[in-house]
Amino acid sequence: MSLTEQHCVDGAGPLDAERIAELQQQVPAWRVSDRTLRRSYRFPNWQASIDFVNAVSNMVEQENHHPLLTMTFTSCELGFTTHSAGNALSINDFICAARADAIYQTGLPGSAP
Image 1 (cartoon, rainbow, N blue to C red):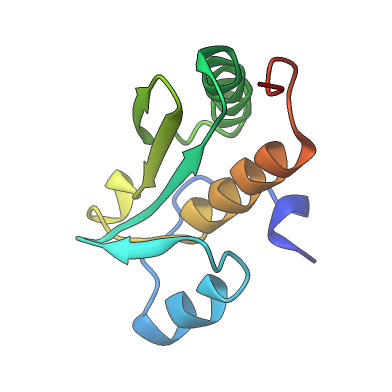
Image 2 (image 1 turned 45 degrees about the horizontal axis):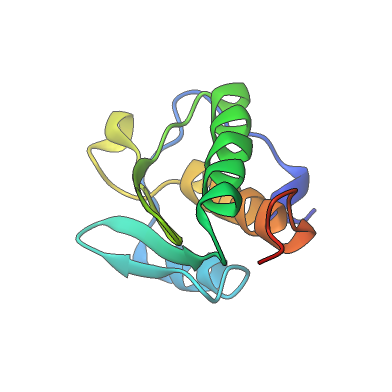
């Protein structure tokens, strides 16, 4: 089952380095930094950025797994880590990363320059 077909689970434990490397292959645009899974997205304008943030916000609220989020006029950076797993990476981080990528790939209203 792909990551985008999975849902976050309560009590997800920390992943070991081998499992992180395996899962990272499914979200290759993401990098691990300071025990956080991170990715930056670029947009042509403010509206596209905010549309993406709103769509991601709806997704993470449904999954109950909220990211660090920084948005500028034409970009958004997301960072996922699992506080309940000791601020380590869990399967939930990779599920939400894959789902955010799927949102980005579908394109959103306002993304045309």
